[in-house]
Length: 192
Image 1 (cartoon, rainbow, N blue to C red):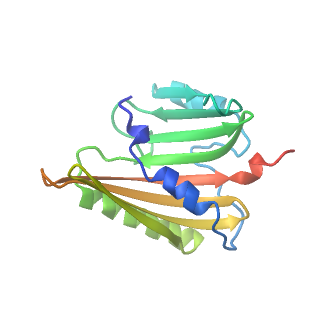
Image 2: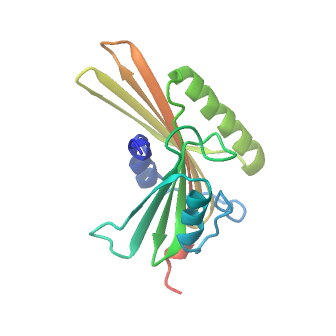
């Protein structure tokens, strides 16, 4: 894979901004791709194997109980989805977070932002209004990055998040955008 898992630079910001936010709503959404909260990494790995997709399994040195599984095709999208990759996080072998990445390589930033707006509208119609978390802009060496994020808290620690990142190369006049949808279920992190 070419590192498209890491392109959503705003994801870390989204998680920091969201974990403190609260609002009332219904039960959490199930994770995508037929995954199950608390399930093991084997289901996602089997999905990758079934469709011949690339997969990366990591265990951060400073968090040895955590496993991160990244899955995506070498080119194109996930089977039956517009998304280009999925990243699942497990603690003690139990699924607690899934991030679905939408990259649209070669497409204009305005197209990607339109896709983001359409997805946000659809999710809002099904699950209620998203709360705006914040926006972060950074500039360096002719590159301007703008990230914004939104969330719905279904219950304590059970969150659906959206993050959009647009990157502009001021010198070349180019721009690109990516977005991600994060399903987070912190109840898995509580001791049994």
